[in-house]
Image 1 (tube, rainbow, N blue to C red):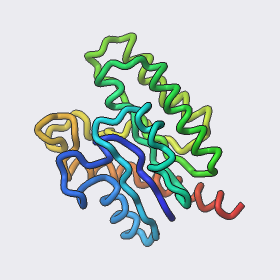
Image 2 (cartoon, rainbow, N blue to C red):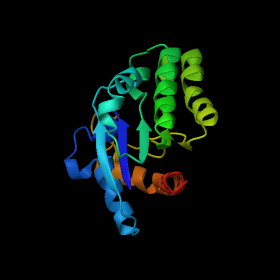
Image 3 (cartoon, rainbow, N blue to C red):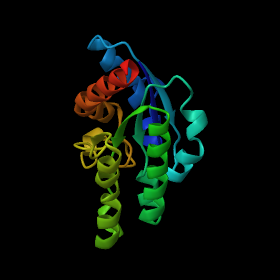
Image 4 (cartoon, one colour):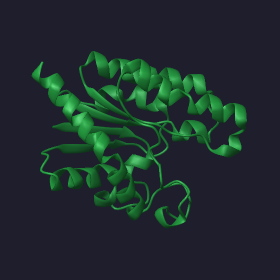
Length: 188
């Protein structure tokens, strides 16, 4: 199973050794469960949803069977128009569907200090797109990690190695669902 993690610094492993980044830890967890998979790190620190769209074709090479899409955090931190973020993510999901690539869509939440209207508009992007594209959905990539200082680096935004372990453990059932979807697509 060839999986690409298309994301930003949260998946790229900002501030961590390569082997402690989310894609590497996920590959280890899958191997421990007896699932043969290569997990490619296509995370770029600082990337936005529009940036991910711009590099989609070369970041997700031919032969990729599944993608974990983790983008949007930088859009929210920069206060970008949620409609721009939504359009870029929608386009990415459409392009992956056209290529018959299974997707696990990892949601993001806007920082609460961005204001009620912004938070409401931004946070609604992810469940709406997951529903319309019928992809495997994980509502919040940083679930259980975002507010725990023991699981984050000193910047309070990026998970440390223990935080990445927590993310992998929480997401693993959804990743297994993704792999099942990719295998079903391969068989059809």
